[in-house]
Length: 394
Image (cartoon, rainbow, N blue to C red; front, top):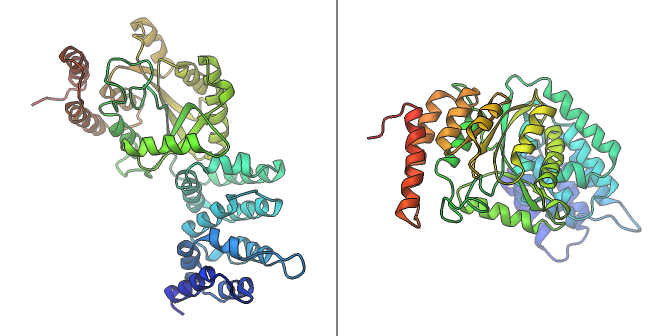
């Protein structure tokens, strides 16, 4: 049976309000499918609907248990990354029972190499507020199961042939003007910041790295329903961000730079365990605890954190900038300056500096400035860094 026909049969069973022995018929249909049919059906029909329609009975067969065993163990080798991600996301919905947690463990431990990295990234960036951090550190609340998962991640990381880079970024006054920075009109996305993210994601090699390795580490608090996080993601998408993760703050640590930095460090400590095959760079600002956070990253994870880039919004003295640069903490005024620092740390290729500079100038021209004086001051900064990069302006 072609995969489309098998999928239509499943859809018919899922949409009919009452169907005799529906759960058993769905299970039989999945069990009899070829590998291609099963993968196509799970990816396109919707694993959430499957779990909802195949239920255990108080008196009778445990059909959902059979379904979890079928997909999580018996037929797992037949599922591609997208189908596995759909299945795990379905398991995240609602209360994660012990059986659900064990099945999540089975899927993750049954995935290896590049497929595991791909699966983790899909789970991290395509599930809204239900990201990989929430999955492993909240939904899987059995410490023994979590330890198995993290040990598997570490073991698989030893086999990677190319270490790529995760970009961690603050939001307010780093991605756009939204806290202390009055030099730009409110909510302005900084000229060149999107291009910097792209170049860091691309990497310094001739062959570009994997796309989509961007995570925002923010002081904005998390909530159980993920409302604030979803709003943050929507705001980022509106301003040009595609796939990204948001690692949120806490209502208890929303005030005070030290508390904010502590929460961000807690988030990073969990996040780096999820991606041991990656190195990291942090992009933040000088207005809300990011210098302390970045310094702690470098001190505690010198083998994983390549550099810290700080957008200066409080006029940090030059001698402080020079001292921090020796520790791989680079202060910058424009994102062309950030590009120069990133190139010096071998995080982007030299040609990437020019691409960022060209993008920054294009972005600058689109800003609706409050005054000519404000515009001219920022233009002078941008041209200074463009000249430092050796780029001719025509």
